Image (cartoon, rainbow, N blue to C red; front, side):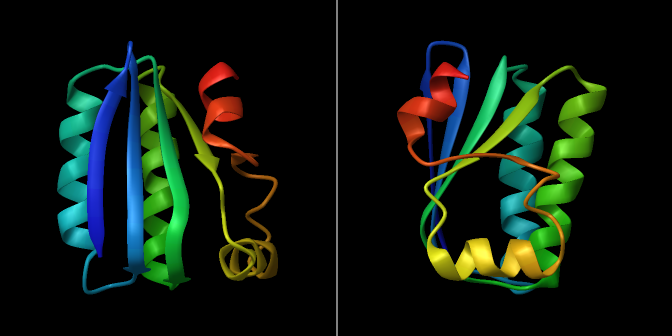
Length: 109
């Protein structure tokens, strides 16, 4: 999986590409912890490049939201491909996350 991070003002945007599975969650967890330690006002995770997510990946997204909540940092997901939306739906997580159609909408939320 490829991860790119940028800041748009005080908002951290993380672009994910490839597969979000148990093999890569440790690296992404480190990136997310580092991002949270920088105290952004919000973290936007752009899922447009993902083609697979497993339970480890979903668990990491849940943990990120929980950690963000504790640190008063909101989490938004955006541009989720249909296969990712389906996986989130099957696990009843669609309503747990703020999911936006576009990165612009997530940034403005």
